[in-house]
Amino acid sequence: MDRLLLIDDEEDVQYSFQRIFNAPDMEIRTAASGEEGLRVAKDFRPDLVIMDVRMGGMSGLETLRQLRKSHARLPVLMMTAFGTTQTAIEAMKLGAFDYLLKPFDIPKLKQVVQKALEAARAMRQVVSYQPLLESEDYDIGIVGRSDEMQEVFKLIGQVAASDATALITGESGTGKELVARAIYHHSARAELPFLAINCAAIPETLLESELFGHERGAFTGATSQRIGKFEQCNRGTIFLDEIGDMTPATQTKILRVLQSGTFERLGGNLSIQADVRIIAATNKPLEQAVANRQFREDLFYRLNVVRIHMPPLRERRSDIGLLVNYFLKKFGMQRKQSPQSIAQDAVAALEHYHWPGNVRELENAVQRALVLSKGEAILRGDLPDEVVSSATASPSSPGLSEGTDAGSAETLDVTSLAKHLFRWARSSPDLKLIPAVERELIIQALAETNGNQVQAAKLLGITRATLRKRVEKFSITQHLSIQ
Image (cartoon, rainbow, N blue to C red; front, side, top):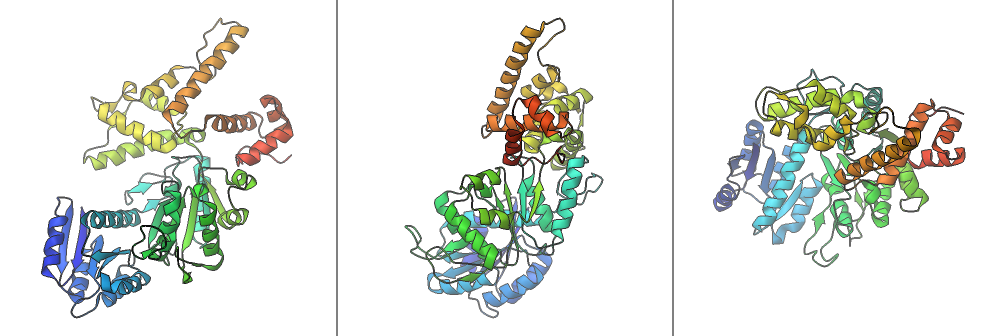
């Protein structure tokens, strides 16, 4: 249940908020002054505070200063009349999450409140990067005992202890945002704000305004000044997901923040100082984007101070059983019942599947199986069809039976493999099939030859020089040996 504290000395405003946000999943407390608000906040421990700038007694700005001292991560929305917008801007500099103009546009009010509550939930979700599941004191975990994940855990611990910029790479669904949150929660900025921005989900025309804010009249529709995420998150941590999709103009501004800690709002000339730690993530090979002049080389090197690569689930199959148990426990807690069990042949099927959507797809598959299961245990038949059909074929030669001659076996192998790959592509609309398959073939060839690039190139039917280019293109580090 979300807890909202409204601090306003006008009874009609208190009444309006009670009506607008009256819901079973929302608890609202009110206070008529800053002094009372501070007392209520101490005992009520709200998830969000909405407060007027001008009140009798302690002002809204002074109340905000006091709240930031005792509740540094608590989002605070300031309310102001049109004539006092600049006062609200001062509030933003003191650490307010956003501000609202009176009279309220109710749909916009609800949208801003929802966004603030989502940020509050995100900052409360402590991410553990311990490989074991015995601990029950966290909501979200990065789970794994494989060698690949042990390396990730070590890097998280090392980078969290510093203030260095981190770049997290890996395919979609591998858990890059969880790594970013783990770094944040174990860093010296853990008691300060954390904001996550998906650069691919925000239109190009709006991303710069979202990050840096804009001045009134900066573009059509900019009817008032807007504070961007960097100002909202001052002294905290910003996670820029899918940074490879950022436009060149926005890349330039991000570079300036990293170099000098300053930026300007869109349409403005005032240089604004921002003390923000940046953690970035991408599912694209940024080296290739740099080579194609789609991404700034100087920004890449600024971001790539410490790189953490999240391996795809197919490269750490030994963690699948552990992840399944974790999800069963998680969903059991959500449904307030004991965790359901899973049949061993169902686990085997899950371990055989290639998981193009990675951990996110596995979580969805477990949740689906829980819904469809009719007994106390998840059976193989409760799993998605693509998982079951994948497990039916032999891992070494799908679709083959003994006694098949070599010529027909080769044709059948390739045909079966192609069908399997296109089932994979259909289940993941964002997947670029040929680059994904090419990368996996190179990884497997290096694994088969113990990192011998000459033998791996021969196995793939390409030159060693071509293999090296592909290794660099796809940022492949595993199984390589010095030659």
